Image (tube, rainbow, N blue to C red; front, side, top):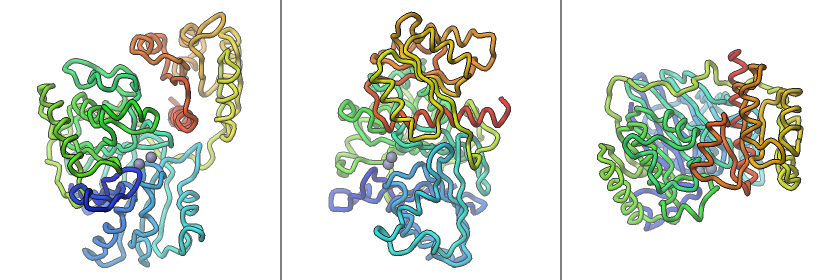
Length: 450
Ligand SMILES: [Zn+2]
Ligand SMILES: [Zn+2]
């Protein structure tokens, strides 16, 4: 397997004298396997030069696969400039998170409407097939791909690729779930495990890989001002990699304000962090033009915890029933407004007893419970549902809403059986993306009859 970086910048292309070494183009990585399968990870502005290189290397028609993490600009802006999609006879399969939300074809087509671009999506000469993905495993050419949701204000997938005896993960635009103390390094300390169940899930996703290409947009020092922006401090990326026994870590999605020298300093900090943990981890910053071949070794990684059988979403998902329980009418209204645009059937309650009664009556796909409510509080309702005679309530996602996100609180919530928690005050796009991720998991489980 060979990897080439064509775009390593996050958020905004930043060409110029201070970004010459690490590059100014936005996210785009080329993966080529021994059997010739071509996978392009994201289609930021780096895709322009990749397209030119592909056409210089081989005469069209070209065959390739484009795996898009999400459709924020820095991940799709290069698509209309990716020359291979203009070549007759070429075939491209495009993959991106779909399901409950927007469909990939519609989003790409919107980006190419005439006020923005002279050629429409329908006018591209290549044959293009669109695949809306949910979490799970699929086969792309000769590569086994596992997709898993990341934590970002848009529904975003990370991709784990396994081929040629090598495994890599591409995880950009991800924020740690344990937001209040990413500097504590708990995930990377020897013997320590991730405090938040979703962080543990992320670690399991990276487990045992030869190379992880990870979001490292911020430093730990910058992060407190960037909470809820959907990106990762580089130090936390190191902690994830250490906890997951990763061999090499490529820091990427460099902040537009980070010049080359600042990237060097951040790499030095990250190497020191790995050294202090007493572990061997090769940390480096992804640079435009960099090419590498992850070393071959036996695939010994355990599979991520919930590998789904099939990953292509059903064309029209049924309406999901969501229960919101909070004694604060402002929070209920905010959540209702956030979710109203989606095709959800919403139920609300203002105390624990009513929440329990409604949950048993309507069996929601997702339950959002305030921690502090009159009567039964959120953890008591969670315990009651998990112990219910109806087995449906054993696995339904239950999310606790709380103003405190401390470690003790978190553990208490998970001990009660909560799936996750949301910290107040909420940021609307985050809530929407998280809700979609929880519901997609429910959908994937029910498709398998699990
Ligand atoms: Zn991004
Ligand atoms: Zn993004």
